[in-house]
Length: 407
Image (tube, rainbow, N blue to C red; front, side, top):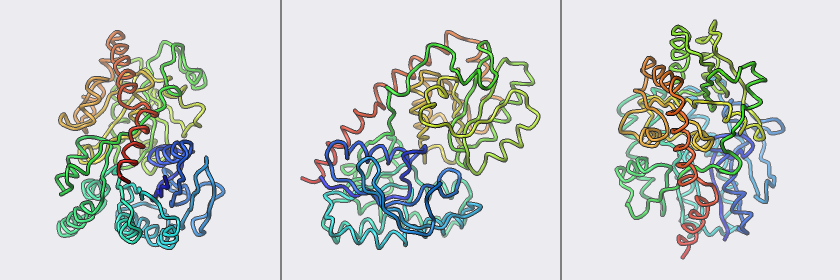
């Protein structure tokens, strides 16, 4: 099968959406499919072009058997709402010539991912010209999140964007997303339920697994085996609501809890989080860790932290959740009771009201003082990951669905 993948984020060496896209493309290529990718140079999550790449040149490379075309884009120094729109638009326009050149490739399926939804109209136009089915995968509803988080404002603009979004969504032959609740949102926007597919994020449950001894990273950070480690690892951006982490760390310090907080990642909000944690002796910061250290990083935690803003909770499903669950550790999250995130986390940890730092801190302390509960929830987390998010099983189902779309 010939597959053309079209999207802004393809960075298998990093984390998040780009990593999933990269792993998926490599997995399909390894299965004998002819896979091409149209994307941008690596830049996320630190909003800087990766070493060895250029923001202004078209390049072509082969990664794990996949032909990758990288297109120029503008990267703002400060990713505000209007700046993000300009950033996404720059890739949507720069990628058009490369997309049109793929008409001669004659793909069997064109697969595109949101974000960036700005690429969706061009993907639809290509599929009509080429006569091939077009599949849209929604990792998050970027337009809804942008208005919910205040990055974009104006009721008339929101209504216009919502109308355009629904029109474009209805044009795809297949629409998938990473949670059932997000698929419900697609049908609410007019997508026929017969076109929707549940396609969750995955995790390599062989590479990420519970470790039975103290992680060597504890010693590197000077954390004794007797202390409880509460870990946040992931992008430090606007959607995460990271202020609750510093507030919870301060509350736990004031109560004398034997907890060390480790915050690992980069992003636009890291500086603010570091400033908010100034003077707290129970907080340590780490940069993103290489792939070979990921299991030791996740296994260093006794408790994983997964904050989420209330106004984004049903528009995104954090990609970092799968690794947390696979590590066999409980998760404390801030999410509304009716959200998809809460539904998953409730059986694998504890859920606090978004923005409620005292409740978030209390959930952490409750797990700190109850080892039996902590271990039981950790076992449930591992079991849930094995049953629902195992990489080979998820991608094998996806491959079957791709094949059915071409018949």
